[in-house]
Image (cartoon, rainbow, N blue to C red; front, side):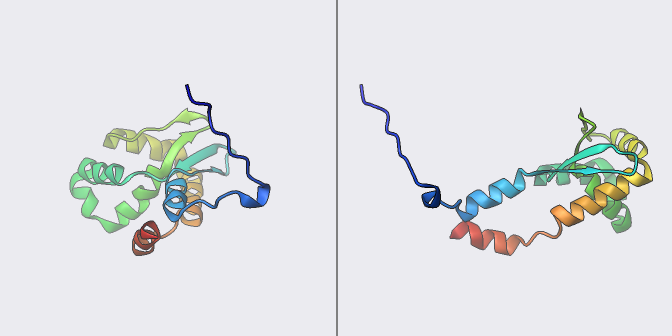
Length: 130
């Protein structure tokens, strides 16, 4: 039986995360925002599969850029006041829109833009290579 190995590092010697590890952390990050009604809305970046499912779910409506621009930030909503949110049908999407109302939608859109913003996929690819 081998003894477990323990490595002790000084505070300054803590290894920095690799570019890949940083991207993974960013992808799984959660952000909380509060809307005008005081509701705590937790956001997390949806995976690419969720985006494909959204397009499939919306059908012809997905070709409307204005509508997609309004709906896409809502896919980031993970919970509202601790209640999990799931969007797998158009009816669930519409229920979320109604539940959030204008103030909630504005808070979500602002938080998504501020915390997730435009993604630079080419820079991400280069960071993973390093």
